[in-house]
Image 1 (tube, rainbow, N blue to C red):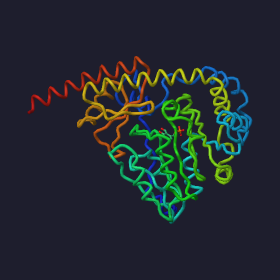
Image 2: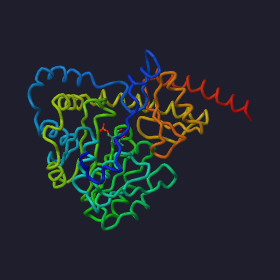
Image 3: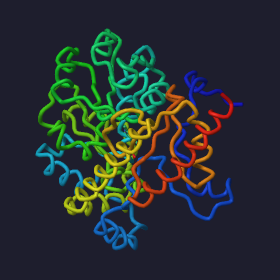
Length: 369
Ligand SMILES: Cc1ncc(COP(=O)(O)O)c(C=O)c1O
């Protein structure tokens, strides 16, 4: 067989949430509820759908390789220069491009042990060394320990705020305190994929945070309901954007995606109303889990954490009922399941099924003890 680069040996593909179709096939079910990928259950703005329908007849043409209209719109939205905006095929591509552009063999990338898993995968793919720092309390980024892990080889630091899968959030003041302790030439990615869900608590990070190597990444996959379109972006110093653009594939943002994102930005009221719906449902789910003694901790974002020593049995039984949560064993959190906030009726069904499963498990425990 042809010989791959050495870092391929330790690399494995990202494991996404189980697709609906897979569960339906596996269990012979006719319907299922996917709560595994932190998607927006309400779907995209109707304006985004109309924009995609209108442009569909043009897909024989290449899109604008620079996605200039979207870049200009995002720049206006954030009150920055369009030269500070980098667009990606999902924010996942932004993370990969950043790490590839700034870290290679002999370099180090610092992230949290239970930070978003793509940081570790992208670092390994780039041939750099990942430095995974343990969380202070098992869930939350330990900013002191992360600052202490930085050395002359550190090129990139990745922090998800809020973090997926732990759902923890740091204030902008805490993040700025961390940034102030770092060398000026380190690239710091503050991954704000779930920003819209915490905008009120967090404030305007784009203007409140400062560091020469600061990169704030956002996505249209969560609050905007466009996960299938793959649109992410970052705001950074123009020199960083110019450099990373050299690594970007031409036409990385497809035609439908560019038009959907433009229209979604024009329908902010609709998007923010769905964010309110999601936050309200998340609070309801969290309170219900807490009341059952099953809460895995307070979560910011569009998901909650369930904690139980028999979480893999709960996962199996939820799937038997056509409900797909996300197991967190790959993060070393074997007792946890991550459950995305669904539509109100989906959340109610999840809680009702969970109630049956948990009372059955506790009956079994009583019988065997
Ligand atoms: C913290 C975080 N960052 C980035 C992403 C990537 O999202 P996308 O590539 O869809 O923008 C995700 C997706 O779940 C995420 O949870």
